[in-house]
Length: 153
Image 1 (cartoon, helix red, strand yellow):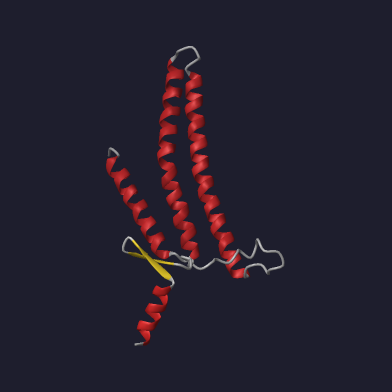
Image 2 (cartoon, rainbow, N blue to C red):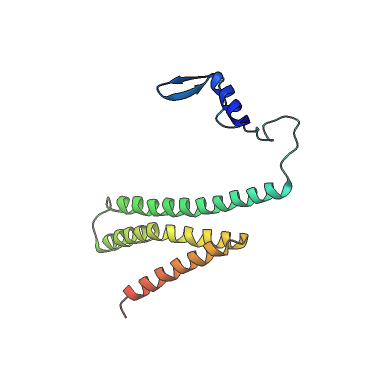
């Protein structure tokens, strides 16, 4: 019966409101989290291994961001140049250049996420994430098969 005493002791400090027991003493919902060591003065820096892994992860994210940014900027630049070419006097060469620039920009815009997949697969493969690398290679292989099947022979 010690459980009954514990329950009755808890109930003595609580009140019942709308069929819900509300404790009189406010209890925290979750334990307090420790502050990050970097923000506390006088605390040692994180272990080298963890910091090195974080630096590699950030470097990988930077490479992926660079690939996506470069694809978007170059593609956008090609579209802008094609719009600028429309101000020139109309001739066959101008029409061909506009058409090539717009098709190239659209193709580059479509290929940019594929390049991102290749970069992410490579970087994660170097980290030992073979499962993601194999899936990324499979997706790239399927895309290659789909593109080659659509080309005229």
